[in-house]
Length: 543
Image (cartoon, rainbow, N blue to C red):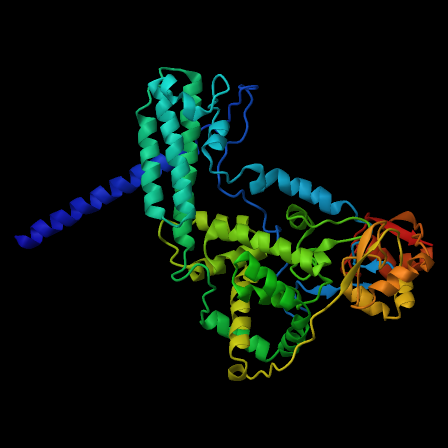
């Protein structure tokens, strides 16, 4: 008899649980399907996006589409190369005449992925009220007129306050309290009697959508969370990490040792900036797997520099790119941009392993996989790991493998004695275009030294106004001889266009126009010089 009663109780509990999950799912579905409009005082009939915090999806080619195999000799097929210059002083970047590409891509990127500066993640009450079309009357702040509004409008204001409080609690990591605050916001909405007022109805719909987005973000935070201190990178050891350690011990041993030696030039600066920003110092080893600590490393996906930024993401975080400079190759400026990006990702995901995955493939890709999972299905990053693209999935264990080797080099058979000395320099304001070779000749230093100190110069020449970095104790010598350095006038390059015919190769086309295969490849962004297609229009450089 006891067994029968217990069986019935279990059945009742199962039925009640099913009903509860059905109601929650129906609520979330109805909220997400609500009309998505923002009403403004001037154009109340025009639809526009609501002010929600959820990060917009980005294609997998977003920032750090640069693959984890950002080193020569890998078998994953996405190698990077180190940029060099050809004989006439132009930067052999395989970019060709692509000035303006960064701006164009950035414009596209900004159109689908607004930054927080544009209000995406504002949590102040006024910004939420603006987005929901709730305006102050008589030019008075909304909080000052609550008593004069109807009871329905006052409840809407209360709902906004609860949403604001929930966002603050979410950022503080108090997820349960944030959910309770959202429950109170929704309860305030249920008490509103719209009486058919279209403005009130629209505000209710927008608030419902906002609440549903907040709930999804809270659950995403739960999925992504890793047990432990979220300010630290957990030094996990598992089969995935072990495989990457073996790679460094064997096939990629030379790459690791060379990259480690180069790290001495740049890590002191990176460590200083990470400490100032309050980020884990272990992130200073991220450029080892990104670029091998090569400032001119260029991936097949067009990611460039120590931190491997693609043009649009670099532009989003303040890295300039024009005819003369590309700040993705500047160590200090690109490090500042990387720190901003990592901070933004950490605000979204909350743990550093998931942040690193998003840094490689874009936050949109990671969020898409998270949304496809059932509630409480993801226990930690390693559940998500199995569902990410292979290149990104290897990225995190590869980075953790580096940390393990750095921490205990002898345990893994490495002798990490010395690194290159850090770069030191002074800056001199140059008000005219000059070539680095002319400057090097006047201050009696090798041209390669100036090139290494000023990696962002695309053509080994300064723009009209530039802060040139020179070795210590050379500042006065340069200032004294500055007038004697000739002004640089870049040669105007001529181009003709050629339509590829069946059976033609780049070598044949180069011979026809008396130019080089490299010149044609550079001018047309051709990475694989054996791959051109019939009908392709090529830009042919002629002198």
